[in-house]
Every structure is written in structure tokens, then in C-alpha cells.
Figure 1 (tube, rainbow, N blue to C red):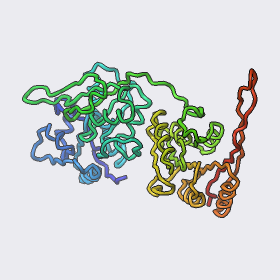
Figure 2 (cartoon, helix red, strand yellow; figure 1 turned 60 degrees about the horizontal axis):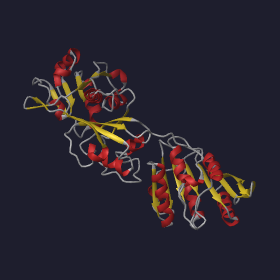
Figure 3 (tube, rainbow, N blue to C red; figure 1 turned 45 degrees about the horizontal axis):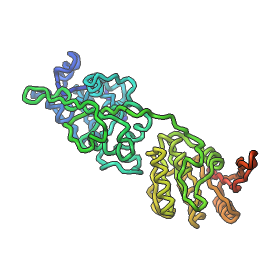
Figure 4 (spheres, rainbow, N blue to C red; figure 1 turned 120 degrees about the horizontal axis):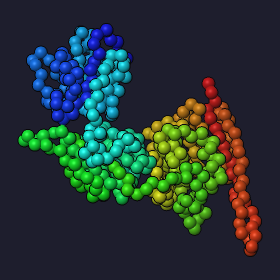
Length: 435
């Protein structure tokens, strides 16, 4: 935190596109009495300043704003930062408070553009999930995009909410959002409204444009004035989903071969041993049909699953299962592990369902990259692979245990039922030994 001397706090003032007319008398007085005013070029242009007031454009220099404020306050100069709407709603205020401390900042909020957009649409917004895609340009959305993508959070939230209010950016436009939702199979699920240029005027006339709800798929090629705000309203009711213990039939499987899928009983115990949290990063090695990784992704809604499968047919089936289950926090690579895994983030949990003959290397890599207290879970059906795993774990001085699981399922026989045994499976759970 930047060290400050005792002086007036930095005033962070919310501004709309009607400039001074939209400010309270107190906020306007702070602007007029400031020695230094910091804001985006467009925001600064809304005001008339005297020659004694220094103006600084923070466009492209957000990281330096706290430094500018600290220097000015140490020189006992009055500082105002002009933000858009409510500075604490996806605005600069939280960033500055984190750098300068709450005692050195005073926030004077305005009505947010979100509130005005909903007011123009006559839409109650208290249940809206607020999201911002005002980030660096990561290009168009694609299946399997990782958390670094600017639309990632929105794609996750769209699966879980009925009403979303989205702060856009010049790159992540309403049309790009519409295309992303369509790629995710949600094009028919939402209606989109767009409120643009709120309070702006052109030739002394209002430049506002309100596009009332349109089917999202009709917006994929439309051009909207900037700046704008997107409101997404779900028009197909969201169904409650089973999060854990999906039946085997919920997954497509490769047939007439035996089908590469971890059966429900084994999957349930394996997922339980992975000790998943909401934001866990999970590796699924030898994904097969994707059953374990996809169910993990549904449990870790704030996390992400990175999966790899060498068989092209199985990888295609895993991709289809991802689409069927509506999972967006899942990235699948069709390659032989560990190819490309060096770029994956360190995992909280790892599942190895298939090793492609590289079991020794994968166990060493997994334990090396695993976060503290993370778990490596492996499933084996052969003595040979089990012996390799236990030998490697012993040589690495890991902490491990083995569970043998054999389930039997009822099957009809005439007018009665009998039990049919599934193949026994060894579940090996391992951790790095604490230092």
C-alpha cells in the first residue's frame, strides 16, 4: 500500500455522460476545487476546468493512477478521480482503495449505467447477475477457451442465471457476446437488450438508443453504438441439474467397443477422493469419454478442468458429452500426455484414467506440479499398472493408499433379478509428503 501523509482524501466521483448536470452539488464542488483531476479523455471532456487545474488522462495508464494520487496528496494537493457511473460497480474505486487504503479515499457514487439501462427498459434489476467483459481483447469465443479469455466469466454465469447485466467494451461488443452464446448452444436461451450512449447528445439531440429484447441469434452481426450496456434475459427456463453421480447412460460412449468410461460407482469414489472445491483446477489425463472430468467441471463451477485424450474417436465423444452437459469450464486436448501439459496451470487435483504407456512419467509430473494438499487419483484394472504406480510412489516417497472397489448391479432374469459383477478397480490416492 502506498504511504500517505495526512491530507484530504482522494475523491472518486461517478460521472455520467451528462457531465456536471448529473452531479450532486457536493460532488461538483469537489471537482471545481480540485488541483488535479484524473479521468478518461472522454470523461474529462465533459467538464470545463480553469487553467489552474491539472488534468491527466488515465487512458492506458490505469496502473499509474494510484501513484499519481499519492504524489499529489503528499504535496497537499486536492485530487479528484472521475469514474463512470458507480465507481464501486466494476469501476476504478476498488482498485484505488486497495492501493491507497479506504481512509485515503472518498467515493461519491452516481447512478450506474446498469441502473439507467434497466430503467430505460422498465426492468427490475435487483436479481440481475452483474458481469463485466471490459478486459483485454482475447478475440472471438471458442469451445474450450480458458479462464484468461475476456468472455469466460460471462459464459459460466450464463449457465446459472436468469438475468444478466453486462458491462461491455469496444472489443467485446454485444454482437461478439451474441456469437459466443450461440457457440455455447445458448443462442435460443436468451433475449438481448442493448442500451447505448445513455445521456449522450448529438447536435443538441439525445443520442441514446435502446434496443428492446431481441433473440440473441439475431444480434450476432448487428453493430451497436459505443458505449453500451447489454441485458440478457433467459427465455428458456433453466433446469436444476444433477451435480454428482450421473448415470453412465448420461454420457455418450464408444461402441461396439467396451466403451472408455469410468463407471458411476468408481467415478463417485474417485471424485470424492479428489477433494474438489468450487474453484479447483483439475487435470484429467486419459479422459476417455470425459465422464470424470466433466462431472468434476460441474462440481467446480468456479474452477476449470484441463483434459487430454490421445484417441481421436474418444476425444470427439468427450467433446460431444461436453456439449450435451452444457459445460463451459472444460478444455480438451486431443494428444498423448504429457504433450502440451507444461502450459497448464498447477492443479489442485489430478485424475489419471489412462496413461498411454507413460504412467511413470505422468505420476512424477503430477506430484511435481500438484499444489500443496492436492490429490492425485488413479484408476487401475490391471496388476501390472498398479504395481508400476505403487513402485513409483514409493520411490518418490509419496503418501498413498489403495481402495479396491467392486460393484455388482442388479439384472433381470425372467421375472426375478440377479447380481452381475462389474470389473474390480483399484483406486490409488496419492499426495506429496509434507516437508
